[in-house]
Length: 614
Image 1 (cartoon, helix red, strand yellow):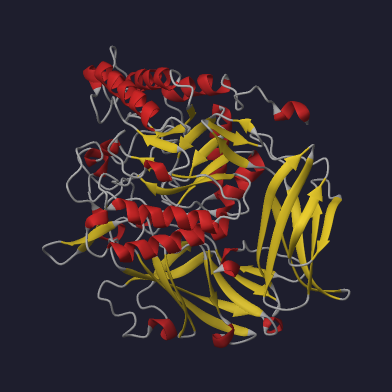
Image 2: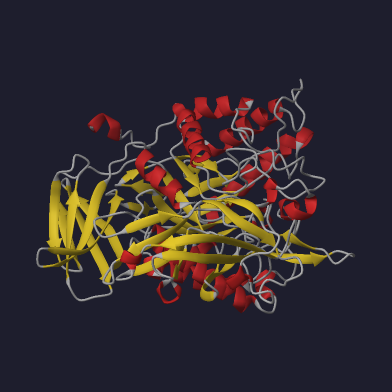
């Protein structure tokens, strides 16, 4: 996996052929793809399909949008003959939720997990300097052994549909970039960079490089002007960068770390990453960036847009960053899965902190989890059911791949290891402990770890809070609990709970990682009623008054930046409408309320202003 996690880059030794574009596509409704030898012969009755994209919203019939099972992609690729002396890998940034890759009929790779990259090594099946048939089978079925979780239901006519345990649409397919990557036979397979400390302006940095050969390795560090500020030989070691420009909130600075394998004067392989120097830690009830306490302002988000679905779109992604910058944001959470690597690169450049979340959503056995999340817990949870050990292994692999992929990003300040798990029984503790321990072991930076606490596991009910380095609360008091004319009760309920948390967890910072209410843009009502823009503003004002009562609340990330698609349901009018913006990225009234609050609320609690130092 380590090589798979390296983001593809063109260097003096590496080449990339982009495979995005139009592919052949077919549904395998009768499960005949293998029997008819589609991997070697190509697809039957194929249609054109853009990659990257979710397939669901491209079609005009409901059967295609809701399809549950195997879909196949195919295209011809030309592999240059001059690449035969090195490695040729097909790199999929994601295939949701599992994939099998074939080249010229030969199976190259299988992968489980729909939001992290993997490579299919192609050398043994390539027709050099010729055209080759690349075929991918992608399966989107949900189960208790997949992340995210859900189940499959069979209708009376035999049609199978997914039933998610999560409140967003199960978009799937080849939703991110696909590239063919050439690397030398002897190559760099992994690199790790950790800012260990900053003392009197000098950054002390440790690095490690993994190669598959024995030649010497050298590291060069350059600043943003291209000046070399440090050099070192060896596959690991410490370096010192004097007068270091630190990476800060909304004041990013990135150094270029270039690693080379050398044989005398010859460069055998070369790779680079742009990395910010910074430290993150927790001290008592403060969340610290470079030793300064910060207040996180931002959103839970979704990779979701009309027609593209969850397919990565750099235009939509950039628009979202511009919206967040306009709002005065400094952070977001990758709810509820790892986002495209390009989004983290953008966060690195823009100075946004990111709570990076594994796709562990659906640990509440419910197809109406937005409603059941507030109800009293049952005697048995998912963690008490047979077969949970299989879920655990899938979960562990997802954590491994997330941390391996994102470990060097300056923007990543914490790991979110579950979203709204039902931790109400003791049976959850062994499972959660293994996941938390694994994350600590794998992360070279030892970032803080947490999960989002669900309403049904309020203060005193949750059995796993001691595992979290800081607490993240998802609360909808005033919407799912005591809504509308009962909003004053909702206010008192949340205040009472916060006082309980104050006693139960007196030494941890708290974030509100979700709060919000569904709002139809353009619906106005005086006095306010639920679903109106006026009620959303009223609700947010109440929430913020409560947050400001407790100085150990160190962050707020409303749900959601934009409206997004969900499954059909009587509680959902064409999707979740809790966005501060519509799905096509236009503001509701609450966006202006949040902008005023956040633009006047400092990023740094102690008054530190990194932009004044530049």
